[in-house]
Amino acid sequence: ISSEIASNVAKDNPVVFTGDRVLGTKKDLSLIYLLISDLVKVEGIVELRIDRSNILPHLALLNSYDSSIYDSLQNIEFSKIGTLLNSPGKVECLLKTELGTSHLIELETNQVFVMPMDENTQGNIVVKNANLGSFEAEVSGGELGFILDTREKNSPNYLVERFKEKNLN
Image (cartoon, rainbow, N blue to C red; front, side):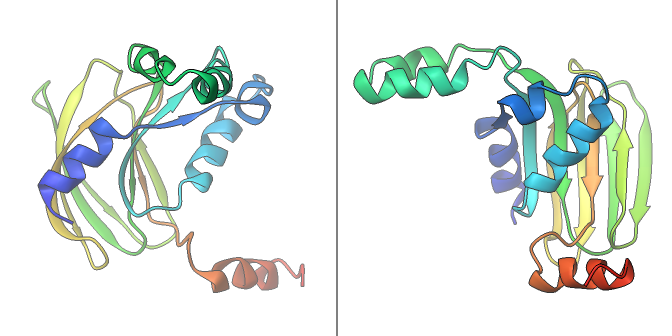
């Protein structure tokens, strides 16, 4: 994954979550954030957002009748959760923020790390991972900040192994 591709994926193609599953349970936001990170299966960098007003499905329906509605989608601001780096396996990541702080993060497989960064904070990461290779990219914060997830989500054997660990088979 090149740094150009990594930066463009995060900025130009945010993943927006909406609906009752992410909006209905306001008691424990940590469960919603964990669910959201579980649902993102693609490896790489993804900017995560939430449609708190649940307007996206309605605009999509309107767009099916009038394609000019698509232009209005570009102007809607969704709540920023942060930037997710989905990187299965061991990873080394150097995070430098515009505030002048640097953090070296080393994670083993099946771990999640969250670095709090508000939505106005920008950062730069340098990543080394067996699956993704080595690259640099820009990241931004949000309600959570920068999220590094090394869990194996795409492997068909992952859930089978987890069920066996918990004697659920």
